[in-house]
Image 1 (spheres, rainbow, N blue to C red):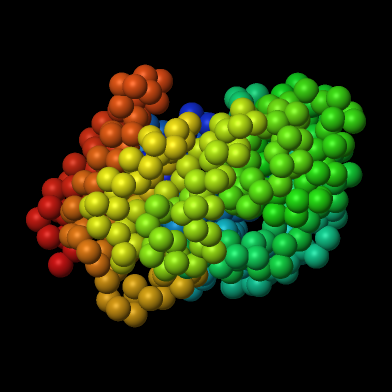
Image 2: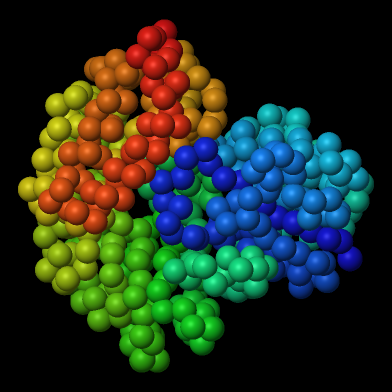
Length: 436
C-alpha cells in the first residue's frame, strides 16, 4: 500500500474561486487507487494551501507521500512545477507524477519535473504505474471506451472541501464532435463523444442527493449534444422526483428542441452556460464555431422563455476583432438581456490549431504559462495593439457589470481591482512594449 497525494494547483489568478469545484479527473484517479488498497487524499489549493504563507515552506503533510500526482492545465503549469520541485527537495523519496491537458501536449517540458508523465486519460494505467515503482518516463493513457466502467468519484478524498462545495460536480460524457480552433477538448478526449448511460448518471445523482446535495454542475463540455439521451436522463429525474437545481455548459443547438428545454426547466435547470464566443460573424467563422450570430440570438430568446438564465461566454481578440468588436459585444449582451457574461482574451493553448498558427507566425511573445488564463494578452493581435486588447478586456467587464447589475458590479469590481493589483507590473510592461 502506498500513501498517495493528488494535487490540483492554484492558478495565479482565480476569478471563480467562489465556486469550490474540484477537478473530477483527480477524483476518478484517487477513487481507483483507493479501491486498489492505497491510502489516498486529494488536495485542491483553492482550499488547502500547500505552502506556509509566511515561511514559504511546503506543508509537512506531503513529506510522508510515496507518490504525489499533480494535474495541470496550462495556466497552472508553473505552479505545478514549483510544487514538484518543492516535493523533490523536501522529500526526495517521493515519486512525482504529472498529468492533465498541459502535460499531454508539452510532455518533454513536464518530464523535467516528474518521474512519470501520463498523457491523455490516465484511469486505464494509473494503478499499474503507481504499483510499478521502477516506472519512469512518459506514458500514453488510453481512452476509456465505456465510461460506465468508471467508479463514482469519492468526495471524501477531499476532506473538508467536500462540505465546502456548493455544487456537486458530475460528468456524463467525454469528447466533442466540434473542432474550435482555440479549444483542446477534442484533441485531448477525441471528437467521438463517449456517453455514460442515463441509468449510471441517475444512480450517481441519487447517491449525491442522498448525501445532501441539491445543486449540481454538469462538467460536460457540451451538455445536450445527444438530445434524446438528455431527455431520457431528465425524464428519469422527474420520475424519481429528485428536487434539484442544476447548471451546465451547452451549445446553442439545444435551444432548437422545445421539448428538451421544457424538461430542463421542469428538472430545475437554473443556468445554461453558452460558448457564444463572438458577435462578429467573421470571428465565429475563424474560430470554426459552426454557429451564426442569428443562432445565438434565437438561443437567448428561446431559453429565457423557459425562465432559464443565460450565461454568455465570449472570447475577444481574433484576427478579425477590433476595439469596436468589444464594444459591440457588450452592447449585444445588454440588448439581448444576457443574465451574466464572461469575457476572456483569446490565448493559444498548446495542442490547439491556434497555438500552432501563432507559434508558426512568431506572434506569441511570452511563454509564461501563468498568463495563459484568458485574462492576459500573450500574443500580438492583428487589428489592435496587445495593450489595447488588454484595456478593452477590462473595459468590457466594467461596462457590462455596471451599477445596474449591483450584485455583479460589486463582485466584478472586487475581482478586477484584485487582478489589476496583482498584474500592475504586467500592465506596465505591456504598455511599454512587452509584445515587441
